[in-house]
Amino acid sequence: TSAGAANTAHFLSGSGHLKADTYYRFLADGRFYNPRRVSKIVDIDFFVDEVLTELRRVEVDRVMASPTPLWVAVADFVTAQPMLFHAQAGTFPLLRILKAATAMPVLYNRLIELGEVRGFDAGFINPFPLGEAAAHKNTHILVMLATPREFVAPDLTQREKLLINARFAHGNIQINEMYERSAAICNRLKDLAHGRVAPPARISIATIAPSS
Image (cartoon, rainbow, N blue to C red; front, side):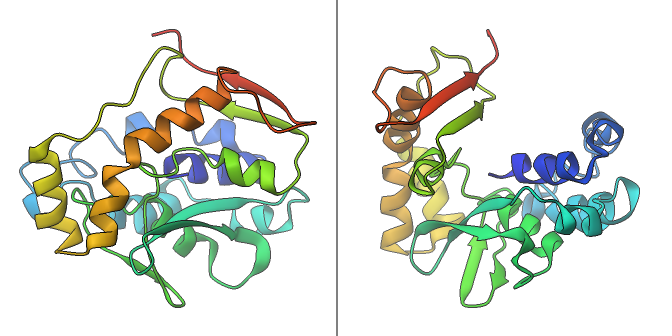
């Protein structure tokens, strides 16, 4: 999901250890994040079209040839549902799938078309697709989180709801309702990842999370 999809693509290419400096060399100097650039506070075009394409390019051929399938979570503005794209299926270019996966609502505020899907970052509604991994009958699942075990996602404030509707949903009731449920969805996934809820039968889950 989101930047995790790009990280995993680098990992599957076999050269991920050479691309880790992406974050502090190219995404921390104002070209990627600029709160004064109201129309595009986070520049996903720069991230994908320049960084992942040239400056620290994803080795697309190696990812496509990897024996490990890469499934990328993307949310659809039309249906207000998260879905998975099989990156190596060849239906859409890998970098376009990664662009849809990282197209952050409000901060980037653009949709990326993947066929009939108008895709955007699923991070708020499917921060890690654990349910899908279980549904695909994986028996051993490794979850890598960016938040500590005790973190509880808070409900959106009224101000945040208004901002999402004004800047992104534009009256789309399903999208607004999706974000209303986002904290509950995230916390339910975290409960499953951390063993506070029993996983489905015959599935073992290991979770790595920061201590603070």
